[in-house]
Image 1: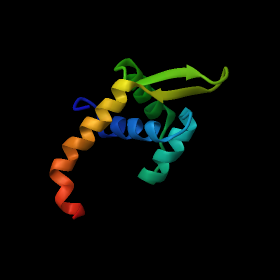
Image 2: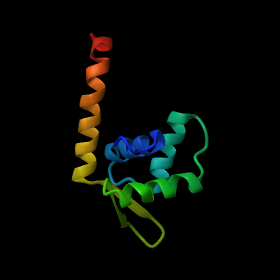
Image 3: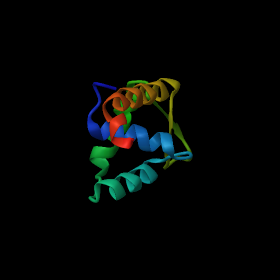
Image 4: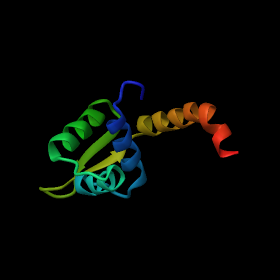
Length: 94
């Protein structure tokens, strides 16, 4: 996960948290978080990068809609990142 941008990490986390996430659902979640419009030219190339890295799988829901699913490797990367963050933030939650 160390070689991902912050935006790519956010994409991975959002995808992991949605049921059958498709591009527009992911985009909507990120727009709510960032409070700004996420352009297709930013969204889809970054999703494709996560697919290429083996962190997401990409499939077709229909001819117009792709769906994404987190892979086992993607889940392991999130868990490792959460563990790493906890060593620095655990004092904040006590």
